[in-house]
Length: 369
Image (tube, rainbow, N blue to C red; front, side):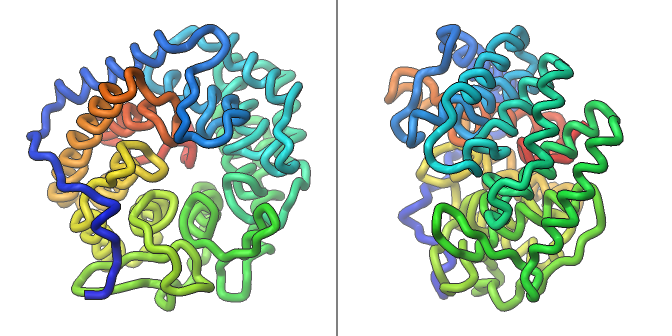
């Protein structure tokens, strides 16, 4: 069988039976730990989360933590949300204007969270400026580029119903559509590198999701890029160096393609991707959303919604129990939680909440309500 995943990056599935009460307890424990760990200014930084300067952003910083805690029912974060926004404005990162103002890493996402909690008109006006600005349009990906502003505009229109947000979304969407290559994909230019990514974090799937939340879209022919073997399917991270880097993560690989594209993928192909995720098993990297067990399990929720087959719900529950165990093991080893939406414990708690409530929407990717 061709290599569709690397066994060394995965671990055997734990045998704990599904227990909804245990999942509820895990959510409460994660939320309580996050509330207690906030020192009034920030959360403790985890060395595996890279540059500490990003402690304000949605991806791994305070804005993402507050967004998750808000959705999990924790209250009283309004002042902290505004403080994170003020700090980012006063001290933007030095790695380029796209990251400084972007949806996932920059001011755009931080302002969106601050508005969600405060409904402040001044924050909304500043956010509108960020959405309509043409900052590094060639990034062509949701985390740093114009496609990410579609998600911010979509959220603001859902929350305010103001026409300016729909107008901004339509204008941005036209630009994103116009930037597509002849084969329906996009070329990303990120930090001096020119690539064509497939997954939701930096490539095709994320861009298409941002468009498809609010308008019909034309899907690209992905058949030249699918890696198949014995009824399984995976996608490389990049299309121009096949087979390229092989991952089984939300950010790159089958989990993100299946979870993000949902009904847009051919059903048999989506099912083959789901089987690959199950065969590979939980990620040894940890329980998180971006490149962990919980993020992978969103693909099972998507397949359950699409097919109605309880098998996929059972598999999501099995990954959920494993992810809870991974959170507990890492907390015991480090002595505290990991405080980040995309790489930490609150992302796992959101997955558990969605699993218990029958939802399959991946955090921060819409649709918004």
